[in-house]
Length: 292
Length: 186
Image 1 (tube, rainbow over the protein chains, first blue to last red):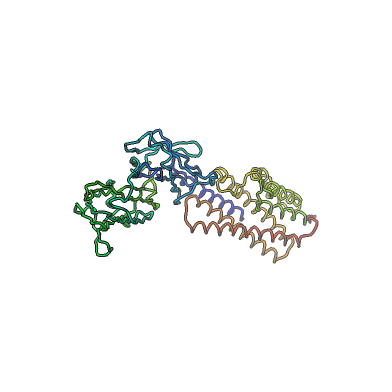
Image 2: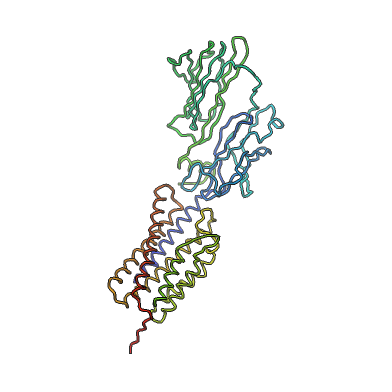
């Protein structure tokens, strides 16, 4: 008597297995999907470039290197012993978020792009099983190396900075001689205004009684006497999460009282943190497929 | 019959424990072989032993690859996890038919406490195995801590049931006569 029920239960569970497997199979990505990056950096050796991508949960391949416009880019100091499975930054129902960081020192900029910006929107990513995919990665701009030949104090010098991976950062600059700030500019990316708020304030030698002013509302020129400070604050707005990795350089430029032009930069860096619905919309946008 | 039950005991132990050092030291095919020979000894007296014999034969052949492949490694390819599920099903079916055999044996020994215990262990073992099996079918579509905990509980439950089964076998062995009793009616 019991035998019939036993086999019936087994059969029902078998159907559950088949249904679940078919559903899971429909969610699998054909190939890893890269997020849209909006990155601006300089070609200096100490800079890194990190690319984020979504892969299937059971995809065990490591990402070995990129080929960008014919140049190969590697990560240096790779461990000789790689763990069996690649590291997942985040895990979702069927997919995982991974990243690969390459050192800019592995690209010979002096030879290929000595004076001009290196801009690209696609990379060719090669995985550990020797398969490669063409991926569109948003837009990356690499400026030529910073000119570090200036010795002595910069006119507007950074005295402290703090940064976290959610893009919130603060920079404090002090004027080492009287100067005028004429412009503060940064590349304007789609929607960045919705997500990032940039404010600045100017104060005397003591840090109190100054108000944050939105960058758009600043009235130029700003005159700083010697010893006065300028602060730049980046704050990522909590209400809308950013799905893209964003990094850019904010440029403060002006002239000293003596007539010398100067340029100082503040860097903004955001490492994405995705939710399951972010993942679904990214996959839908990139593959044109319906997801849950 | 004592020795027959002893073989079934060791056979089942070989199947559900796995000590993998290079190869699986507690080899599944050997386990199924032991169950097969144990059932064969009782075949005349207890007709129910035919079914476990058949399953053990199938299990012997199908489980040969598991000797060489460590199925508990997480980085195995997808086809091996399908194979693991197949082995789990065979083990469950073997356990089920062994239980039917045990019920038959225990009924002839007419010890009510033992009969009761066998029936209970039967219910719980099959219940846990089927539940664990049903849960397993959803893991590929779920993620999160809750499901990991469920998986853990199900795995431990199945392990406990298997151990209880072995104890039950031992208890039946103690009460069983040395020679197989053949009922002859004239």
